[in-house]
Length: 533
Image (cartoon, rainbow, N blue to C red; front, side, top):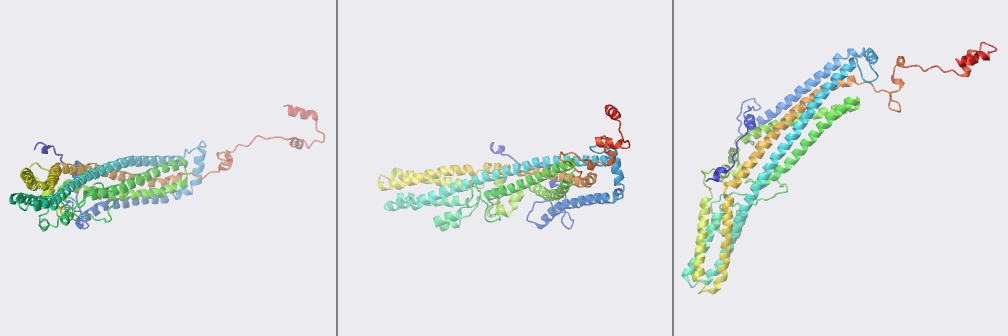
């Protein structure tokens, strides 16, 4: 009783309760219950309405960007006639690098808006990487717990199958030989037949807690077993460590933890990789936008504008999927036991008492297999008593029965060892711990990761909206491409004539002769005096 009090428990987190409290509307705008019923069309409508809010936000962002473009085209059309005068004013006030006039103020404002937007985008990307890691950790804990539970269920089936196979072997082999040897002795024959009857009872009792029933029935060929009341517990056959995706995408019935773990691992790999690629795309767009503004390259700005539009659509689309997933997950995590108990995928062929016992593992509940295990233990003890009597009394009269008797005793010892392990595995503490760990991974880490991813999508969408609104101003502020000389410096062709400095005049002897051409006889002394000055 004291050990049962240490069983871990699950309590919905604050974020789960807050998301679960969100109002639900269907397509007709009517309020609906927030009970997790994923197969219901009404419940799917509520998730569709919630995810469509991101589409509404996307339309609003498109209208905002369109209004900025209209404002840019209409308000700056009249400024084009004055563009040459503004450029002259800007060039007069420039120092040769950058701008200090209206164009300088414009590009400075655009640069700061772009830098602020890119900073917000980088913050969103950091949040996205953290959220993606948290969601991945939660799914890893979920799949690990499912695989552990699947290993436990596989061990239960293996022990049951080995025990039943050993009893089958004793019934069909050594006990049959002993009956033939004890034909002339009624007391010994009665004890042998009692051992056979008790072995059949144990087989029937253990078959009631096994799903691997088809193979057992085929091996026994006993009609009494086929009519036994079956309380299936485990999948048939379970996979301890599945690595391949099942050929069918449908969930097997009854529910298999190994199948679920394998499917979740494959889907999580694709989800994690998709978010990493989306985050890298956002990061590349942000960095190249800054590069385009720094280099004032219009071709780079055009490319980044196209990618920014793509990132904007992906951000709002991912936000819609994340919103629907967060709401559905909060509905499930609020009371997961109700969904498991009511879902046909889990309780097909399984008693609700069995599911409730392993889901809650309350110390006030008795194991649904307690009576079965008690009767089996009692039957095995009676078999051991009969074999002990035969060992003491029958071997002296029938020495040929010693070999068969030793074989039955060996099978019985192995059966009792398996039986004790089976009792420990059927206890609710192990499977309930795996169930609680899977819920914590999904509803704690997984929920937190999805919320951070939703915040990332929202912030990145806002950042790209601001970037798209500021890019037209950056386009207008960029100067035309200057002529560049071979050494990388702008040539004189890019400068106005008024800014060029004339080179100092040079004189050649012919020019000097030309200047003195009016004199028929130039004075040599005068020429020497001219050059000596």
